[in-house]
Image (cartoon, rainbow, N blue to C red; front, side, top):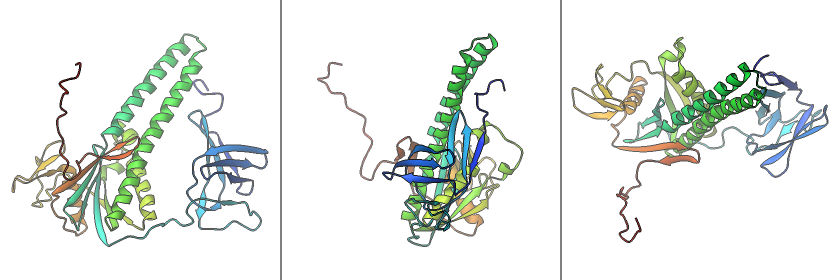
Length: 337
């Protein structure tokens, strides 16, 4: 097909669970051994889960080959296939127990990826999503540039278009993987934080319009709501924390202070002002408090907001540490400048 690499995108190879095995070496690397082809393919990265291996799926995606090894955690291999056992770090999904019985309520967005309030504390958590949008639009420009060059060369008969097609596929792959990295980094951080705060149950607002046929660049390409919630549920399960979904329709307009709906309550991005009481609150935290009310919990008005931002190297705090102030850097008078 015109525009495709020599191998068709989506090519899939299935390998029966007794015709391959993983051969770890140093805990962080090893070999995938395919018996029928007499191949030993090196892989990198730690294997997290231990258990009985399933059918191996090898796929050709974005110009690269990927191997997917399903694992039935906790199950032992069949006697006929003693090597059909993946040796990972954990032999059970729940690796921790909840420290307490507190509840958390989460509004999921993009400007604030997670806005979290609690039934036992007036502390709230905001995890910003600005870096995710920046990463998406950076790679969108890269993809568009390589695509334009590729098409220009191909339309004029230059064989070098294939090289830019490879660049284009790589940029698409990087865009997806970078977003995936940011999202999973934020989720892992949030789950561990909730566990440390003695949470045993989480309620997440489910956006009503996600089910409707109103797809656009924002809610399909950048904001991976369904993936985010599924990943969050998987990680919370490791800490023994239950995840519940709550229909959040109307929670952005309703005032969590006086329980009335104010069409003009959200005066600007990120700020909600109750016209009755005059109290100001972060708009996403207002929605999170309404999610709590929808399931019968009263949540204190947040007095301390812990803000974080997702970066390549983890989640970093934006809120200064207690006792630390932000000072304007002083110019050294002896500097040559």
